Structures are given as structure tokens and as C-alpha cells.
Image 1: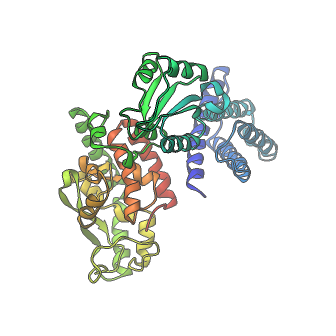
Image 2: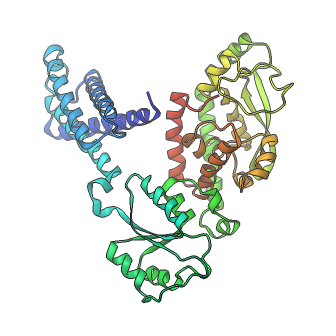
Length: 443
């Protein structure tokens, strides 16, 4: 089962729960008693199975997300399955109206979700028209970026700026604004390496004053991909870009939430920790806990704790090296602990100590950091916040084990640091559960 399927299953489970709740509330004014828990569970299971089956059939047709037609088909299939169950086993006896209400609410909730998440396909007028202004290479890159934006944007026009020194024909001052109005453009993306002498400043300013939004290429890249274009930004962009900070009360609230979540998690996993420790000691010789120096906020080193997953002294001869797929240093039990993220449970104590937070960039080893800071632009900026147990890069990108992977993860880490909000933190936590369930990205 793919990670996307897990997310869809969790989402459908939420819709089923809400549908049952609304069905009970819709039936109660009419004096209908609530059915038994067994009947409600049977109805929920049938709905989920039918929705998952229809989605699997849609996936065979290269559809990556469930459509409105699939929702209707899933509800119809659930109704067909419930009829023989009702007459054969007595499920939902005297509660037929409640079952119909549940099916109706599920169709409305799931179908509404599909429409809301893909409104640009249903209402083409809401697709944001884009005018790309720049040189040939910039236009090519931005056009390709729009093509990968899931239909949220559409290139309506392109304007190539002349090379420096080239003759420029005189135009009316409103030529660009008129073009934007004629093509239905709501956003101008400027992708130009050299603006001096070739950039139509007055024409773009008139567009801006007429209400057309103007973005540079790095900002548009961030808006579309939810990561930063490291190669296209400068220190000045970091200085003047919004974000990259928060009020003191937000930091205090985040620290309080880290403590509460860490204590709650420790309370839930405490009965299993002795079992894990015993299994590690029986699996291979060596200590149960593994202590490793990592780089934290502000570049300060701290001791990170994990359950040992490699054989004792694995790096004694080689020194620090990147983890690899099917790493021979990992023990038999260690592979399982890594896939399930159980090896990272001791880091809850790092959270309580204040070395880490629940959400943030994953802390890296100082041997790798010193090398990456020299070779990867802006790598040191990821240490502006506390490292975390999970983060935006962890849920969006698989395990990083090379310099190129470190650059790609840095795009997500800097996006998170720039746009840290409660809603983004909640999204990361929700997506972390699906990553843990699938064991994705572990090595």
C-alpha cells in the first residue's frame, strides 16, 4: 500500500466518522434510537472497503486521486452490499433511515472534499492566469514549473526581455497592463537574471498599481512547490523576505507543546521500552542506547540518544559515513527498529531537555555539517531553529544520504523555517503518522 493510499484511507475514515455522527444527529429529532456499536462499525467498515476498492480501480486508470464519480460509485456499492447484510444478519434493523443518512453525508463530505481540492478542474475560471516575464532560460523554467502545478496556474502569455545592449522598440506605457488584462492574467512572474537595462520597470509598475500581483521567480517557486529554490536566492532575498521569525510568545507556546507531547508520548510507550531494550541486548552484543553528537540550534553540539541499531563499533575503522540502503552495519533487529522509527524514541528525552523540539529540521552530525556548510549554499541557516523529531523535509523527501540529498532536504527545511505556523506543524504531524505506518525513508 502506498503512502498516498494511507493518507486517503485516514481521510476517508474521518469522513465516515463525521457521516455517522451527522446521521445520528439527523435521525434523533425523529425519535429514532441510536443503533448498536456493532451496527455502526459494520456500516463504517463497508463504506471504507467500498471507497478503498473504487479508489484502487481508479488508480489502475492512472487516476492519482479519487474523483466525484468514484465517490458516487463507492456509495452505491456500499448500498448494494448493505442490503443482503441487512436481510441476512439483521444489521441496522429498524435503522434503515440512519444508514441512508450516513451514505448521503459521506457522499456530501467526500465529494465536497474532492471538489474543494480540485476546484481549478471544475471551475476553469478560477485558474490563475500567469504571465512570465524574463529571458529565454527563465521563461523555460517557469513554464515547466507551471506545468507541474496540478492545474492551479496556467501560462497565458510570455514576454521575453531583450538582451542588454539590444535595441528596444518604443511602446505605450500601458502595453504590459493591456496585455495582462486582455489575456486574463492575475499574476506576473519575473524570471530574469539581469534586470538593469532590460527590465520594463515602468510597465511592470503600472501592472502592479492595477492590482496584478508581481512575484519574482524564487517566491513563485516557493508558492508552487512548498520548498525554496536555493540556487535562485541571495542573502538579500533572505533579509527582505517575510517570515523567518516569530513572536516570543510563539516560542514559549511551542516549547510548552513540546513538553506536553513528549510526556504524553513517553507515557504511552513506557511499557514497551523494557521489551525493546531486552530485544536489543539479546540480538547483538553492545550497549542498548547509542549516544551521538549532533548539531543543534545556533550550531551548538548536543548529545542525541537512540536505541542502538548497528553492531557495536560499526564506525571504528571507517569513521563517520552516510547510511546506505541495506547497510551491512545494521543488525537484524535494527532494521525493524529503524523502519518503525522505534530507535528514535529515546530522543523524547532530548525534547524534554530542550535540545530538540517535536518539529524541526533533523539534526545532523558535525562531521557532515562542516562539509555541507562549505559546499551547500545557506546550509548553516537551517540551524536557526531547534532540530526536531520530525520535520517538513522528513515527510516530503525520503532519507537523505548524500550531498545532493542534503541540498534537496535543505529546500524543505528552509521553507519550514520561513513559514512556521501551527497549521503547518499540524500537517507535518499528520503526515508523520503515515510515514511511520509505511516505514518510508528508513535505512
